[in-house]
Amino acid sequence: MDEHTLNDSGTESLLRDPDTSLCDSTEAEDKDESIHSCHIFGSSSSLAEDKTHPADDKSPLRPKMSHAGHMDLQWPKCDEIYDVIYYTNQIIFHCPSQKYVGIVTLPNQVQQKAVKKGFVFNLMVVGESGLGKSTLVNSLFHTNLYMDRCMPGVSEKIARTVSITKSTLDIVEEGVNLRLTVIDTPGFGDALNNHESWKAAVHYVDQEMEKYRRNEIGLNRKNITDNRVHCCLYFISPHGHGLKPIDVNFMKALDQKVNIVPVLAKADSLTPKETRNMKAKILSEIDKFKIRIFQVSECDPYNEDLFKQQTLELKRSIPFAVIGSNTVVERNGRRVRARVYPWGTVEVENPSHSDFVHLRNMLIRTHMQDLIHTTHYVLYENYRINCLCRNPFLV
Image 1 (cartoon, rainbow, N blue to C red):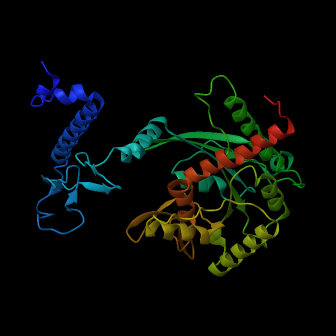
Image 2: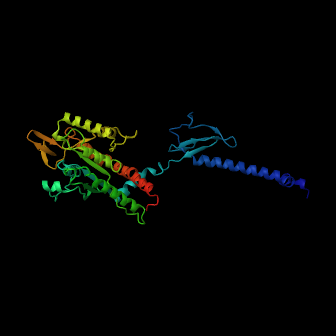
């Protein structure tokens, strides 16, 4: 049979020029596949809503565009509105059949794990005897940590040195567990010569930092107990003209090891004008001696206005002029914790009477995690780097 008799069947072109015919057939398959993909594209993109984008709508979300084979691509009908991303020569649909991927649930997962594990907060209180440290701690956490404590006499106070005592308490509130450790320094400021009374506190802070560092490089790091001091409330006496030498020496020795929060104790012994003057004097001397105290972090732009207002009030309240009391009295039909005097009643939780509410909000409600974070990522890292600089092969 002559090869030229196969024109009708198409075999002639294959025998005559196989390469060209193969290319033609490939192009035909590509064309068919392109047309098929257009139909699939149209069927899977049934993504625009007729009510929202009618057929005669001239908005850019419903264009008539030229595609393979000069086909006019119409937006298919759908009950949902889909996001459209335009590229150079194609359109990609974002299908909201599930309205989000799920990453918005990550904070909930972190919260569940944190609540299950519980929280740890270590608070050091330092100041002269008689400034109301124990009463303030009991007022802050609604507890009684010093129930069995015996008050020493005058001779015992003069003879004893500064010591460190720890009291641990588990607080549970609506399923949230907090292990609170309060570190007290009895004997601080009681001696005739208080030149080196700060050394006991510095030694304790360094000791706990070193314990954590050794546990961190140990074999079992899963259950490390964090006993590092996260915050130090330093009580300043209201009976003076600012900071005493013992106050300056202590804060200078610990300002790079722990978050120091200055507290003006027994604010009810001062008039409002005296309180303002005393605060200004303390802040000027802190700046004069270049003492680093805990700084309330700035608000983010997306924070609520109420949180921004609370943060501004916290910054204005430093140093906190506080009053502590565990006595509950009746006041205008309300039961409040207050101190009763012959000339009137001072409410502990009244912002116009003291800064107790601001201090409690900062320590517990708004900046506890900031105190823990600063201790771990700033103060502890500085300590660890200093240890490695002194001895690079330290283990």
